[in-house]
Amino acid sequence: MKSLYNYAFFDEGSKREIRRASLKAIAIPGYQVPFASREMPIARGWGTGGLQVTLSLIGKSDVLKVIDQGADESVNAVNIKKLVGKTTGVETTEETERATLIQSRHRIPETPLREDQVLVLQVPIPEPLRFVEPSEETTKRLHAEADYSGAYLLLFEQIMRYGRVSTGADHPVEVRDRYVMAPSPIPRFDNPKMDHSSALILLGAGREKKIYAVPPYTRVVSLDFEDHPFEIEDVTGRVCRQCGAVDVYFDELVDEETGETFFQCNDTSYCLARMNAEADR
Image (cartoon, rainbow, N blue to C red):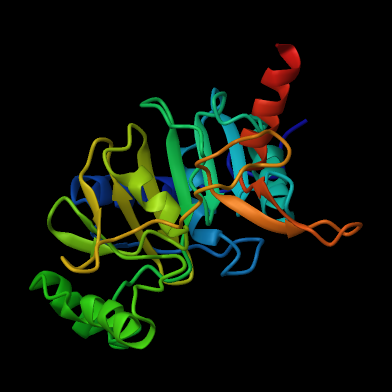
């Protein structure tokens, strides 16, 4: 029976255009490459940028994993997997180690990625200077001049107001000592995972029509000040109640029966893998 859609939903011309933009982004790490964002069967703001990158890259031999804020079974992740699965027939998995292509919203997996894997991050706002400069023309000029005083100003205002940098997510990073970019709304805990990552990281913003990238083994540094160095979330003393993991990003939950607070791995597949490994032992 002939499929109602072309392989991976898009026509071949659309996939080539997105691939060309991705290649340019890889060649200029951290630089936002404009592309002709297509209409998708999901609303803009729900991962259309990442999905378009995924559909342009995926092949019949790929194994796909989709996560949303650390979970494989959320509404966003499940529906993206359904769309890709119905238009490609590729195998899907919840195991990070088995996946060749990983699309994620708001998290980088806890399991270290490999050279043969590609991580695609969904991005709502790709411009790190947008909150200080609304003009696209001006932000382009600032990037060309490497003028990132606005990004530092935002961090300085947080220090003056709270005594520390209070960025909860999307903390800006400098890529290869040149471009400052928004790493997508990943927590600060995940920023160091971008630095010299073995895997290629592609970031897609469908609503803003931008693609940018961090090639493998590229220097990525989170913006900070000498007297206020960058710090990740403090997880000292926290232990996952299910698998016993430490030094990972946690969800803080409340036991409905006892009312007590407990911690659980945010990365559900990582937690399940640890529990399965313990059961096997």
